[in-house]
Image (tube, rainbow, N blue to C red; front, side, top):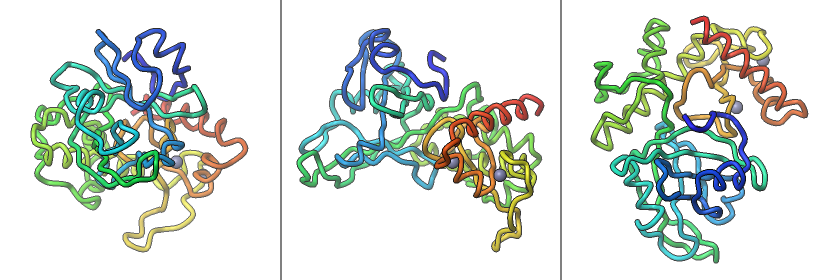
Amino acid sequence: MTFEVGRVYNRKSEIHEVYGGQRQGGISTPTNQPMIFLFTSEAGEGYGYEDRFHEDGTFWYTGEGQVGDMEMVRGNAAVRDHASSGKTLCLFEYVKKGYVRFISEATYIGHHYEQRPDRDGQFRQAVIFELDLSVEGSAPIAAQGVSTSVVATQRELWKKPLSELRQLATLQSESATKVNERRLAVRLRSEAVKTYVLRRANGYCECCGKPAPFQRKSDHRFYLEPHHVHRMADGGPDHPTFVAAVCPNCHREVHYGEHGDEMNQRLAEKIAAIERTL
Ligand SMILES: [Zn+2]
Ligand SMILES: [Zn+2]
């Protein structure tokens, strides 16, 4: 992979001056490069751009077009057709002006339309892409012999051996052809990642090492929260190496604490070390 997950890049000097592509806006399509850049930022919410994880595990990314109805042309069409045109979607998020963090490669799953305000505050039709944040080095679902027609419940997943769970947590959805199958595949993986990290943590916070503070009402399991060490937003599927199970205290501190960044860095290294031994 060209970009390193979790690394912060200078958008101008390290991305566009190297690969080309539009230097402004959310979707950038460099000529003669096998990639399309997608940029997301919390600042975008002001213009009706509200990118986030959906409960099925897909990442919802707002298409381009600042005023009026969005149309399936230019950058939007490029995102929809990236697989057939042989281009990889590379998703970045803004950390500050001019600087973006590489989140992951992404795969187009489907899209739908929503009413969102445009730059002038007028409601218009917006294209919302449903993306699967890809997993590095994983095998296609078909090769794993997994039926995507069945979404395993957390309860079923919980009973699986850790190794099998890990395999499910790293499934690719690309080989599934129908949109619904792909969505199911993403959902399955998303659940598998959550369950996997909880099982790996085994009731102890992977950050401070203390026992989980309480047990859940629903199933009496120890309560810990999944935290993604390489991006702002938690949720959605991604590689188990990048997700930790942490206690609510540590989780708040990592996101909002004065020393949150350093804490997160240590946690990322700890998880990577644990994963290497598994
Ligand atoms: Zn903790
Ligand atoms: Zn988190």
